[in-house]
Image (tube, one colour):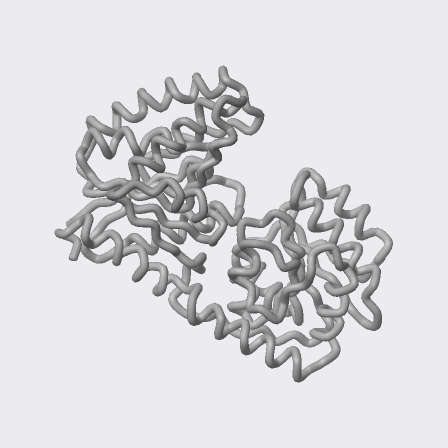
Length: 356
């Protein structure tokens, strides 16, 4: 029986706040699990510095040394896999522990940001560089993340594309909308998420005919989102934060899923919506355009195009049916856990021969 050490420095699979980050970490642990291989979540240490504070980074580095020493003493793993390593939350454990134990080290979704060297996040970016250099295999979810990794790839390393995926083997029940319901979902916080709500409101102001928007989500900027949606009155319904069952019910009611996708890495919600046969309308942004079936993408800074795409889904039954079918086929072909498991283990088998 083989054992894999799994670690997610940005957000543990057990983090109390739901997010795409947490979902991906959980899905990766499931994809790694095999009858002949156990997966251990070895630490929930979260070295996150959002502000670029050298003292904070120094404290995390010192704490990481202590945790790494404990893990080295514990040992017993055949490989170490870390998910998401970047300059605000680097992997401070995996490179150290894997080297000391003499086991393979694998990084999933890591990004180099050499422009951060010498700046407020210098100490953390240095550790990102160390991690990227130490990895035997580097997996990337989207094309833009591969650019810097490929540029600095070492002779011993493999760089592999891993399509973002849902943590399920097959498609869920198809949505059966009974009205012109548009579903949106996104954390209500400053920055890119609020910017997506702002873009959505601009597009909604140009919608004509009958429609209803349901918004799943919550967060510190809820009042700001409510203010953006106030002009639409009872055409907007706030659902609050939903669990998996609640989200499945919301997808089941929706005729369209709308999320502009400002600065999204790719967006797990797009995968979930399409799996349910809910056509997506989003901006044509890097990352988003790698997971959304092509018919749903609109030009950036063109709210009228988003409104037109939504109107057509709401009012053209033949178009809606074709998009819904294409969305489910897109997910079935590339974005279920079976495909991800095959991709990951094709790379791991040569590193862990006893797991074959």
